[in-house]
Image 1 (cartoon, rainbow, N blue to C red):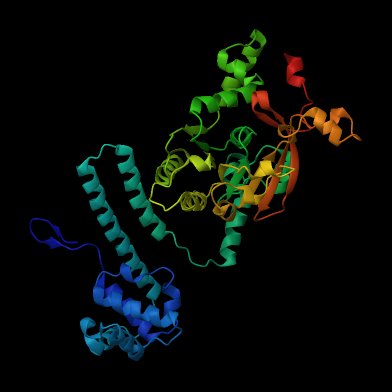
Image 2 (image 1 turned 90 degrees about the vertical axis):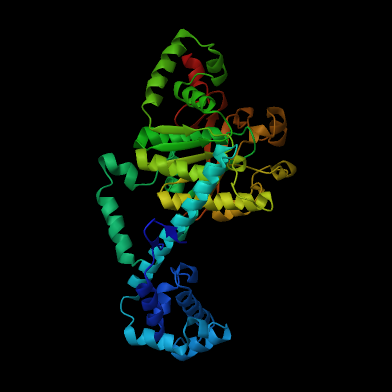
Length: 468
């Protein structure tokens, strides 16, 4: 793209000498291609002749053939490009001017950097055109603009191998500082539940954790409990994308869980004076938590990514919650919903790694659980896409037996057990996948009326009712 400045034409950013140095390095050093192939593409070159030469070198490398002046010249000729690049004399000149491959990674970095700048210029032009057209939906235009910029960033996110010593130095540095105010930055994020934290090791940074259940079983409540516990116990900063419910409704659940007042009565203002005191105290506690809500109904991946990065830059971020996954939109054209969900889960995993925070995504389960005698969820029940299981680092299912069998029927099925053993208010948290640790099942108490999960040993059933 050529830009008129009024005095002279200004070319986009490029470095022809760096481009030729890259090609020359490949011609004189057969191993140089291994250093730059993962980070440099033919389209990153500004001058076509250099791009064609590099493309020929990559083609030879992919066919496991030698790279030198003769083989590259033959490959260019086979593609009908040899004369266009300047013949064999072009290759000879490059080798004569740079007879060594020292610095090939530096040259490749310059080429890739300028390629990114050119992509930014192109994206800026496209964004300007979209803005001039002034479509009726500014949100859609913003989402497309963010997608263009995110595409450039994703192209820059390729990492190379890092020596284990560097990783250990980072670990030791984190361990040395894992006390006081920086503890939440250095460690995994706590769920606030003893057995679950022991099994998971907390919510690990850069991980995608999926909490899945059938409707009305408690997945939103569990996610909010995680958020509250992280913010209260570790002073963690939590971002919550509430796609399903209005932020006010979610905050009401937080208030019910914190105060112990029935969420229904709380919503209608039907509480006693004694409960009012607990509500006021809970308001003070929750107000001091670093929790941020976004309840955009038609949330796209690009919008979520942009908002999460902005929150991370402005306030820091330790945990990101998305409720729930199936209500999100890819923001791009896909052939079917399965492909779209695959794109969404892959994007959530990339965001977790990019921001170095755990991303907790709630997910619906298919009706397949209802057709089985036990109704216990399985990984195959994850709705819309197998990529949820593939992309997630941990998958947690919530199973409540009381949702599927009444007390009398349960007693008939378990005649050898006392009726008091009926699992009322007991939730099984099934860790069905754990990429970096063990799987297993733990039990929590779930107080549905106040939307709160608790460790079984924390309170006995009915304590809140006794207090009121």
